[in-house]
Image 1 (cartoon, rainbow over the protein chains, first blue to last red):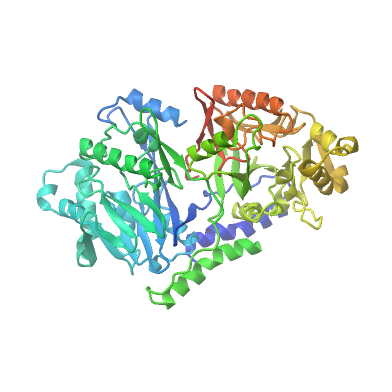
Image 2 (cartoon, rainbow over the protein chains, first blue to last red):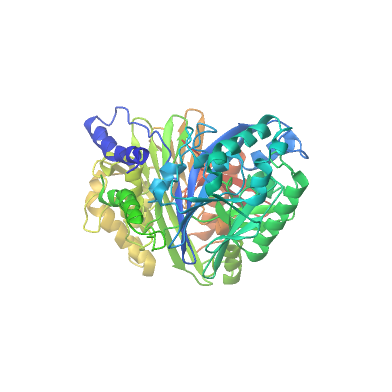
Length: 320
Length: 320
């Protein structure tokens, strides 16, 4: 059993013992970690697990959204009972067991972005899956919080038996030296980070065209704008479908309720808005189950159209 | 370690091994259980854990709500992307660790109501807590899904070291033979069940008056109507508060969005509506964190007022 998982669960018996040994008026220890973040459901003949990686608490200012003021953003946060000036960026990846293949869609932060994220591997073990059992990794785009989980900081592959599939236009953009040349700040770091992850495994990394079927029942859906090759995935099994929207919609209280807002995260704001509206309209029209990488865990639910935007309706947590 | 928890977590290594031993084109086993249902958070100096017990899928007809049609109820379910004619009744109890006392608010179904509920004890172990470590049990009311967890079917106490506190008017109603006499159907069963649970531990069961402080920082809040002594609990620590609303509001898509609907679950419909509106108005006015026993797990969040009712805004799942 994985080290952290073992620690997580064996404390149960240890703590129970400790609690008995002391009188009830003495201190009762507080747990040190959140409960496991694994939510399973059936989609046709597939079993899907949403795996929580953590939350990045990003301090924000009035420049977060190009076409909305800091006051408007804070009002949207307050409507969700969230404090002002901090954007909680949640990370939840999808594990798809087709019955013959185990597929991971995006790979988490590997604890390389913030101290409050990096639990994906622990939750993968809770989900009964060894990293060595992953057959395929599907990457939505090359931002670090989606690809950092591919490797440890010292360059070892975390999923040694997985074929890695990436969007062709994403690869073309980030691996092109001519594009990196003028880049600055965070974008420059994204270029360098994409090379750290992919350069020495380029031969083993398969690029797919936008719209291609990338695994049994999984079709890529171009949703360019957030990045030049940003891609979503439609998952189909038997008579059921769902849409893994990747970063097409980020925080639902900000960008589903206000679909025209253009966060600075989106490299091409107007293109990202068009992709967002198109995907949300599809989800609404088909009443499709959706997942979004940055929605609150378990990050799965449905989208309803309102007078001014879209509303996320989370799945109801259910027994399997 | 508890039997079921051990089974739940040790399968991780077993399955990983099995997956390796077979070629990747062979069948990959599906997990048999949902991920653990434990959500922890800090409230002032307390640590609180929401513990999932399961969901009862209750077939309903047009008599579920006294003053709304079956069509209206199905429309409300559809707006939540839930299928018609079935009400998913979720169960989530609260574990409060004050630092010196461990308190459980309501006790789950003990698997005695439906096959799809009864995981509270498993999740209590995941939450690092042995049933023997519970100092105090607070009971909101005497419906079976709140009290059945107190005892096994053969009458053994599940929480042997816990003092059990129950609302005085609830005890007075259900333990009174004159009230049981004319009762029929489900209500008759509730009378008999309350006696099964409490009769031989009456001497150890403490009755509290509506409004009394029942534990350090926990104040009972009368919310009569659902049952004659139905009680909620306000939890206070340092400068933070939350409201455990018990059954004052059941499914949020039905009875928060439509606060005047009177489900047949509520013994006194008009009184329950008044209690519901009063409590929801308090939660809205104070922007208080709330929990409700039948809200979707983790069953914690805030209430927002809308033009026609109230909207539940779930907490965002966060690292501890």
